[in-house]
Image (cartoon, rainbow, N blue to C red; front, top):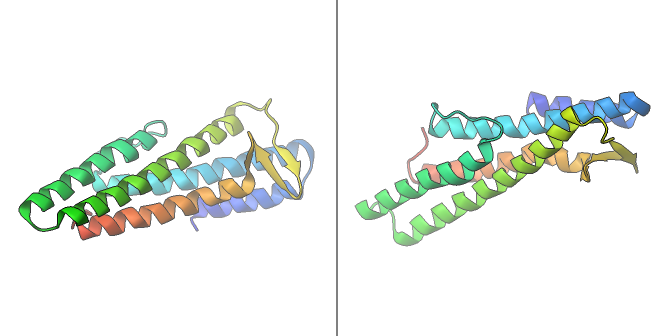
Length: 168
């Protein structure tokens, strides 16, 4: 668990034991920290492939599901043509990477949307019920899982790229 994720869980606990505007503020802050924990995991992954990439918040989903996947496909094709890996392995690796990248991109899109609401739309209240809370129909539990999901998919991507000998 990253430091930001830990801060998010701490803020979420505070939100659940507080009421009114203060609870709303803690809840919003928890969503924000959960987003950043997932985003920073993604940025770390992308910069391992190209430290020169500008991994802005808005561009991160496209960068991971388009640019990174294209880079991996290109390397897999190169190794396949060289005879280092089979066509089946090339397909398996690129398909797995594409699937994991698409999953990370989706997490980031949802998390970013919720983060923007938490930061810039105070008129949309955090709703508390059943000892938890949600914002824009996304629960605190869902948000708490964002970084864990990104980390799991990141591991799959790195493992596949190590098979290609393609992690810097």
